[in-house]
Each structure stands twice: as structure tokens, then as C-alpha cells.
Amino acid sequence: MLPPSYSSAAANGYKGQGKSSEKTASLPVGVEQLSIFDEAEAAASRTAPEPTTQQIQSYQRKKQVGERAELLQDLPREKQLFQVQDRCCDVCHSELVLVGEEFVRTEVEFIPARVQAIDVYRETLECRTCRKADKPQMKKATTPAPVIQHSIASSSSVAWVMYQKFVNSMPLYRQEKEWKSIGLDLSRATMANWMIAATRDWLKPLVNRLHELLVQERYLHADETPLQVMNEKGRKNTTSSYMWIYSSGQQSTRPIRIFEYQPGRGAKYPQAFLKGFKGYLHSDAYSGYANLTGTISCLCWAHLRRKFVEALPPEANIPEGTLASEGVAYCNKLFEVEAQLASHPPEERKEQRLVQEKPVLDAFWSW
Image 1 (tube, rainbow, N blue to C red):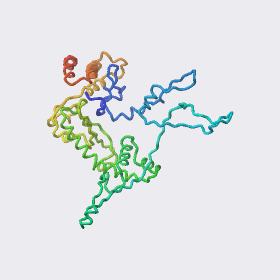
Image 2: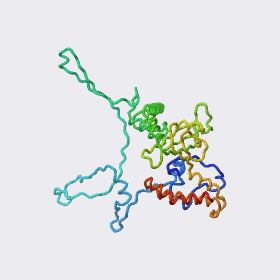
Image 3: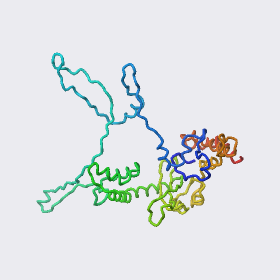
Image 4: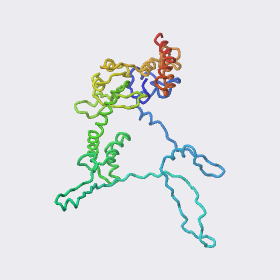
């Protein structure tokens, strides 16, 4: 069974004929989360209310408790004290003496980003003794290599452009406006060049190393999902491309997930990526995974369950009693046991699977 965060290809079938949801009351939380590529759409419907406060009616004031205190507990804090400007008594005009400070409220302050130019210098030292002996010796300070050769880019500026682009989904033309608003007229072409160069020089070697470690694992998960790439050279915009994901197991000491873009869905792509891997490959029933050199194919029960869900009569309000609902129930039972054993050590999980899951599997295959 794929861990909840692993992606999955979109299901086929007659989803248009009825409800496409795979959720059931007995399905553990997370099992239905088969595709991380739908996360943005799912998150768009959520709301984030203002952290709650407790109203003390008798004093007509708010008390900071619960969610608000927890929300602010890790932020750096700064005390802002407003002083009395006129420090004389309004009655007798004598000088007032400080007797205390009163807490009024807590606010969250946003400090806008700013850009600055850093001129990098390095020291040059000379040995005067050697100079007198007509043997001049000079020494210069070492400086870090630039992130991108012959560029004004710093590590922070490149990281911010990539973070905004890939994490916050902000296109470069909008970033161009943002940079200009804080004082730097940085073109989108320059930012694009930064991302390409930084990926080539810094990220690609890191991904290559992760790839080397990934194929050394004993268990891997694999999946692929279609996506559309616009303006790809030599291909129509309507042509399907694929994002392949390869991941270490949930219990692995090296949690690695690598996404690889490929223009197609042929078996040659996982065959090339998994070259050198010898172990168990957990995937759906796509034939491209079936006969990969050195792998033992393990199929996914979440995908099997999806087929039973698709087979449920779309017009039935209560599908219990149908063959499809029985298949769903078998899968749900396995998922429930897996959820209970998730935090157990491997040997204990194996032992309990034989005790709790084997009878379910035997009954399923007999069914």
C-alpha cells in the first residue's frame, strides 16, 4: 500500500456516471489520498479562521489563550513600550514616578523584504621581511565561489526566485514586478537563466547522488501521472507527457523521492531509471513495471480497491451487499490493520501481518 503522500496515476472507468469519491466510512484517514498532484485543488476549499480568543465578559477584555498562544510561541518577540510624554501631574504639576507597566495587546508585524548590493572584497597581505630580502611573499583571503559565474546572483536571491516559482507558484513575470517594487529592475529572462544555471551546477549533482542512494534500497515505490507541457519543442500542446515518481519506502532511513519528467509512458523509462536496482518494486498494475530487470513486482491494494469502487452501482445509495462492496470491505480491513501497525518495528509488523492480515488475504482469494 502506498503511503498517503505518494502520487498515483488518474483512475479510468465510468467516473462520469456517478460519484467519483472513493471514500467510505471504514476507510482510514489518508488511504484515499492517492495523488499529490491534486493537492492544490483540495486545499483551495479549506478555510483558515482567525485564531480564537476567549472573551471575559465581566471585564470586557480578551485573554490570550489556546490557539493564539500556540501560534505565536516560536516567533521572536520584541517589547514595544509607549511612554507618557507629559510626566507631570495634571492636578499639582509634581513630577510623576514610574509605578509599573500595563500589558495592552500582542500584534504580529510583517517586515518587508529588501535588497542590497554586497561588494565583495578580500584582503591581501605581504611579508615585509621577505620583501626586504627581495623575495616578496603575498597571501590573499579565500572567498566563496559565486553561485553563478559572472553574475550578480547570490545564493539568497536565486533561492528566493526558485522558492517563489516552485513553492508559491509565482510566475516570473509577477516576480519581475515584485523585484522592481523593492528596488531592483530584474528581468524575467535573467531569473530564468539563474534557475537553469543553478539547477545545472548545484541541484543536478545532488539529484544524481540521491538517485545513486535510491537504487540501493531494498523496497521502492513507483508511479506515473500524465501532464501537459506547453510549447515543448517538436510536440503538440495536446500531447500527453508524464511525470514519474520513484520513492523509498515509508520505513526507510533515507527518505528519498525523485520526480522525473519523460515525454512518454513506455517501460524503457523506469527500466533506465532503475538500472542497478535489485529489490521489490511497489506499483500499480501498469505493464511497464512488470518485467523490469532485477525487480520483484508488488502490486498496490489501493489501486485494486479503486477498481472495486468504480464497479459500485452508481445509482445505489447503500451499496452494501454487492460484490463490489465486498471487495472494498476486504481492502478496507487490510488498510485498517496497516494503519494500526504503522508505528511498529519491522519484525513486529511482519509477525502481526501473518496473524491479522493473512486470514483476510486467504478469505479474499477464496472469495
